[in-house]
Length: 105
Image (tube, rainbow, N blue to C red; front, side):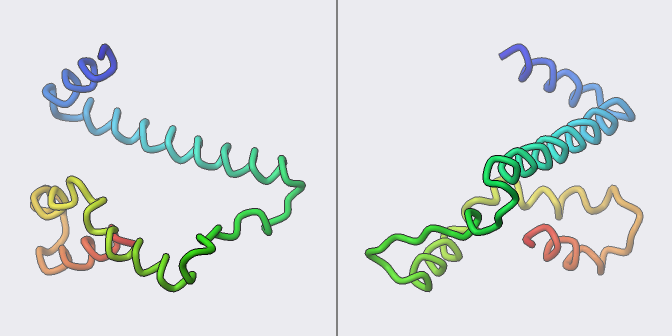
């Protein structure tokens, strides 16, 4: 709760502080993913075979993949915020569609 309250205060403050905190958090997230990937690689001796997707024996891999694709749009909570905040960036509005498409990949 304290972390949420702190981040709420940072976001309400606006300006450069919010921008810097978000960049720092993004870097920490990226570093955590890299460290987790490195730990997983070292655990399995660098073999990528353990990273293959595990599909249910009841369904075909295609059916499982299509289920995920059907559910994926619902996972983008806050996705519309890209279109709302696009006006704050320094690029033509026509490029907003490409930004939205890149955020999906």
